[in-house]
Image (cartoon, rainbow, N blue to C red; front, side):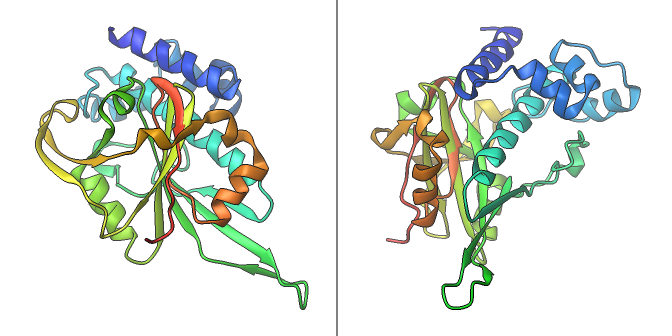
Length: 259
């Protein structure tokens, strides 16, 4: 599958899983310039210069292809934010360095969890709203069916190391979406998270990576993610990290509570 086919496949999977028109969504939320990127057009010279610093990042060899992939990542994150914000007692905001949805130069990209989820509850004795502990959520995606076939997922070393660092003072989770199989799941990250070191990872331009085993049998249907009552019960019990595998459109659930 060539690069153009991969992007088209991702767009189709996102549209099927979230029941949206990706092109229309991008145009309405981010503007015509960003929609043009999905059509393979970049006319803004400043944007071209920025993307040229990132075009060789990981698996992408062209600036336009890299920009398309980033846009689809933003779309997925924003859709998850909308889902969580529809839950009673929860507020979700973008937390990453690209939260303003502006393309960044390669040296400006930092490994910070994508989302910050705040939980609030009403005190029974005085009716006041109390803000409880926050959660930091990292969203990861797999559009190739790799998780189902291999029962493991990979992080760039800097990504997982930084998640563990944030976990020292925060609850940090990963939200996994397998969009091809339409399933989803959760993983809690802390200093006890077991990972295998890989010296050279092909998808990361032979840079090192961490490998984490997953129990794919715990994946749940992605339609459950849209069930406010069910998702709220998960968050209340400590489920918070989501990983997205879009090749098979499926979702995995992991207990985020400490053992």
